[in-house]
Image 1 (tube, rainbow, N blue to C red):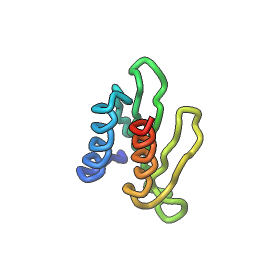
Image 2 (cartoon, helix red, strand yellow; image 1 turned 135 degrees about the vertical axis):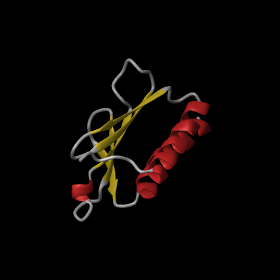
Image 3 (cartoon, rainbow, N blue to C red; image 1 turned 90 degrees about the vertical axis):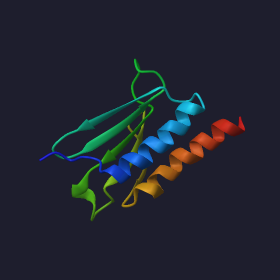
Image 4 (cartoon, rainbow, N blue to C red; image 1 turned 180 degrees about the horizontal axis):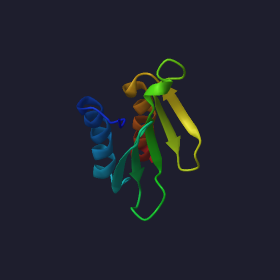
Length: 100
């Protein structure tokens, strides 16, 4: 069985992605679903590596949290059980772009 994002998770992910597109920061996204994880990748340009990847791994739900936000270098920026808490970091990054 595959790990997938449910409707509420996709709504939150696409909401923040849409704001980034409207601001001209992001241009493309991809969703990959595997047996152990689902990945939502955000790209500045479609030909590059993703700038951010949100990974959902249900097997880590009781340990470190099932969601993790990973940057382009592969560094885990934030982990947690609640998607909204993990996405706050992306929202802050978008606010920094507005302030510049």
